[in-house]
Structure formats: structure tokens, C-alpha cells
Amino acid sequence: MNIQLFPNWFKKISLFGIVVFNFLSGGDAFLSGFKAGSITNDPDKKVTIKTTFFTDFFGSETLRYFSILSILFLILYTLSKEKIEDDYIRHLRLQSYQLAFLIIIVIALLFSIFNLQYKYDINDTMTNFLVLYIIIFAIKKRLV
Amino acid sequence: MKNLIKVERARHNITQAELAEKIGISRQTVQAIETNKFNPSVTLALKMAKFFNVSVEYLFILTENEN
Image 1 (cartoon, one colour):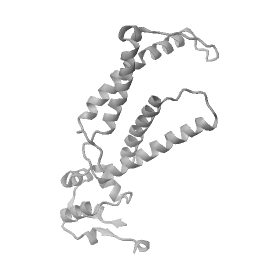
Image 2 (cartoon, helix red, strand yellow):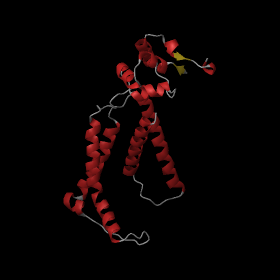
Image 3 (spheres, rainbow over the protein chains, first blue to last red):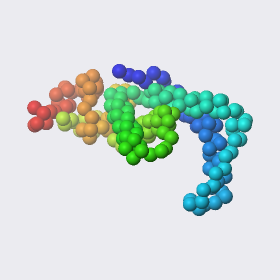
Image 4 (tube, each protein chain N blue to C red):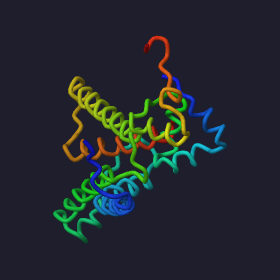
């Protein structure tokens, strides 16, 4: 079954969408971390600064939609065809999906075993899986 | 499975990229087949044999334990 529904040029559009919407949805977190880091470099010292620049500008509901859009663009990227689609590329894609799935399952299991109190929500899981798949596929394509 | 793609490529004096372009596959695929990392489909094997004007049995050879 071939699930690569979109042509290759969709990759460029989706890459642009991923960068823009990730930047917008994660902007406040980045600014908070950047400001806290510029106050002290001591990792033992806990500095909490909450920046709401992007939230004030767009509103929290819009930012939530931005994060959903960034995931949708990630999905679009994974469903776009390569320049040349052939048996080997499909074989590599399948291997990459399998490996990414296995890694995510192992991480989830480790969190469960060690009862780690980290907020690992479904958005993180989706993003991690898709990003992991894209990285593995890109490496496999180059390591022939 | 062994193959003689590299030999035939040298005989026809073409690069992996040129072969890939002529039969409509990626260069990585040619490389993977040549290094025995990937067994091509029947369609692709036939295409390659036709391109080099040889038989599939000549181009792709089963090894001892596969026979």
C-alpha cells in the first residue's frame, strides 16, 4: 500500500509550515528559557520567568491551533513523495516507520516503568514519532 | 543473491546515477542493489536486464545456500 499521497513539492510547503508554526506556538517557551538563561548560567539555581508575548498577541486558543497546524504540516511532510519513488525507498520508509514506532514504545515503556512524572501528552508523542521517523528516514537514505 | 550490475555498468561505461536515471529509479537503489543490501523486485530486475540487453538469470545469480 502506498500512502504517499502528495507530490514532492509539498515537502517544501510543509517544511515552511513546520518552522513557522513551531516558532509561533513555542515562542513564549523559547523566550522564557532564553531570559532565564541570560539571568544565570547556574543549573542548580531555579529561575522561572513566564513570558506571554505570543500569547498576548495571538491568544492562547490561536496558539493551540498553531501547534496543531505544525503537527498537520509534519504529517503532510511524511505523506509527501520523494523525488523518485521506487521499491528501495518504500523499503527504507517502512524500516524507518518500524524503528521510530519501536523507539517511541520503548520510551513510553521506560516512562511507565520508572513512573517518571513528566507530562508526555499525545501532542508530544505525535511530534516525537513524526520527527524521529523523518530523521531516521533521512539518515537511512544517505547511508547506503 | 549476487549480481553483475557493476560489471555490466562498467562494460557500458555508465555511472550509477546515469543507470538510475535511465531506468527511473534512485541512485541509492542502484547502490543498494550493487552492494547486495536490497533485492530488486521482478519488475526492476527485468528492467535492468532489458537495459543491459542480457537475461535476468545472467544479471542476478542465486548463491549456494539460496539454491
